Image (cartoon, rainbow, N blue to C red):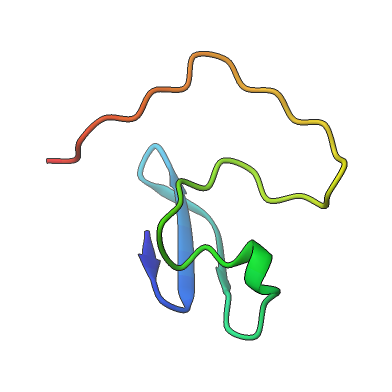
Length: 57
């Protein structure tokens, strides 16, 4: 959930991470327009399988 600049990450309804994006590098800004799957440095290898996006509610 994003309430700019605060980002909360939930897994199975359990809060697992939260942080503020205020003052962050604009290239890593998560406050709007993106689905955030992974946020690592340039050049890191990350793979995903069977990612699905579904409407909420």
